[in-house]
Length: 592
Image (tube, rainbow, N blue to C red; front, top):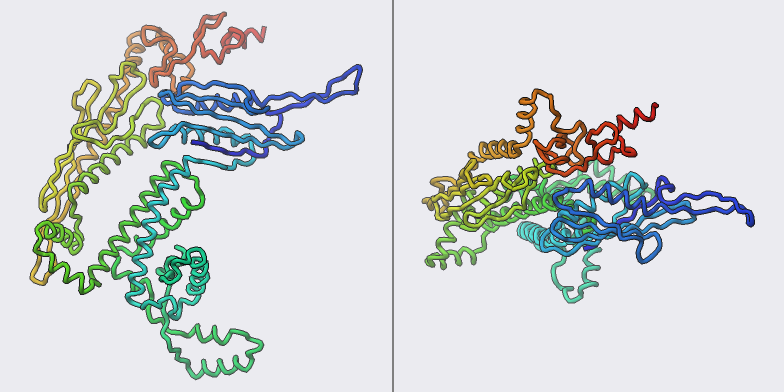
């Protein structure tokens, strides 16, 4: 997996090179070059390493300049042993301009590599203040996401074109594109159709109207298109105006035709008259369609995507796909071909078909969600993933907690965990476990049992999520009638989530222990340093073994490096020490 970005226009060339004039007895004064690129790159990597989650990264190693001059290379190792190589190729031109080509090479992984995304974003954010422009050249990770997303977009786009084709041809005929009012769209389609046929001559005799139409043109036809009546009725005043314009034809050009077109009468508004009858929420459909087109164009052309943006785009694709399929199903139901009706009637006696047919009809004609076993489990999975998302959103940036990946639960297994790294034995942990009981028959209930347990396996809190499959019958008019609706019940989740958050906040026992020690000693003994932890920034660095090992932060567990001042003996951060003295003593000595 390779990432390549180019930083251009350095703001301060002295960060890479400086030049001095040196006197020579034998020769004229000479200009001497001093290279600082290695130190600059080392500082960049050090800052990036500090910005990354310490639970994910183990160490960073400088490998030197390799393959060419000023090509500084580093290796960052994750806590699971994966190695990420970073190279900085410094390119300068006459000492006036500079470009830094930064490459990241990462190992291939079966699932999405969040560490790689964190690394490239942290690297970009650290480099950007020093340079005028950052250009993303290659991102195989983002390209892989775009490829997966585009496969889904391709399906949704085809369904959208197919649905539009059914509606337009059904109501306007096979030559619908030639209808009055669609002249500009027809011109665009014909131009693209010629190119389509040139590329794929084997399909020169198929209807390529929809295949040769951009999504933007298709959306314009669906949402803004209007069909005008063939005949234009002019008033006496309009007729006189046309005669006057005709007499000046050489001067006015096409104004006569435009004048007449402006007086045409709308026969059908494509969106309102042809599509809306099959769409439950027209505004939601419009919004979803525009979002889909923007998302589709982004993954098709931009090729830059993060995991969070990928999830948003997939959600948009799913929404649009669902709306199209719903509208298409309603169209097929209301404009059902005679042969389809005959097929339904002939197969009605088959038991398995009857069950599915009955359930599908009940769902489509009443608008209820009738779910089978997999559909119910999928919904339970979504509920659990949303719960995991709430926990992740709240705590994933807090270094005082570690969150596991989400695992689709099997029978009584852990879906996700959160722990406090400050407690070394791993007991400060909460496991969220789920178990499903599914009955997909009509009128029956299914339950997802969710339990949160502590590190000792004791129950902390629990909740139940319920789904009730609706039921109904065929009425006298042959239309399905609901007797009880399908219900999604997540009412217990709010209290469960609140109790889970409260328990997570109290996972770490050390802050309370610190307060108790301070109270018992009435402030006579200082247990933590008066400077913050390097990792979490909180004032919890132990300086007393009776509390925690020296240097360990009681909030995040990070081992801070502390040393004693040679003058006063106070423990201070190693980075703050100046020639063996703490800042206070160093300041005092400087004054003497």
